[in-house]
Length: 186
Image 1 (tube, rainbow, N blue to C red):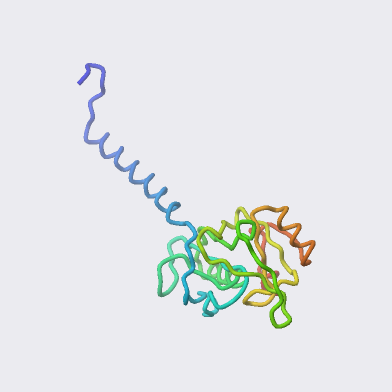
Image 2 (tube, helix red, strand yellow):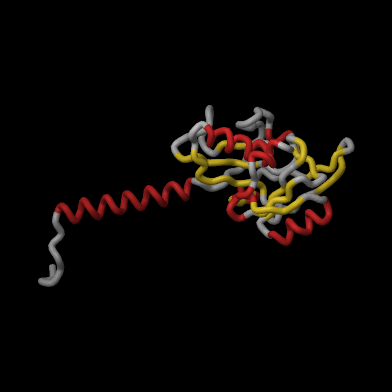
């Protein structure tokens, strides 16, 4: 050992270890909050519908200090409408959303078609099809239907959202700006 190297004491070791554990805990949490694929047969944590049996955008939410009933996080949803309704209801119960992901139609090769007189958009359940609401612009009140009626359709590229709204109607806004009133009126 060099004459100039500081002596490591038990205190240095404990402080250093605590710092590493603290940082790894923070990093571990954020690494765990990634979108996951929604598997066949999984139910919506808001309404109970089987997610892969319905068209349109879907979502998933991680909560701080709380987990969905009956399965590991994240909570999963059949629609963007159910995603927001669940978040709003759980926030009233004291749950804090840590991260919400929605289908990102800028990242998918989606299809819009007419089915039984309704204009619907394809669903995408693979983990790569999701993006954080912090990165998304949504089109609300368009003619597009999802599993719970009028869909809130998310895009990571705001120009894609604008083009979509021009073609299918509706207004664009940041996904983080969705309100209870907007979701309640759908």
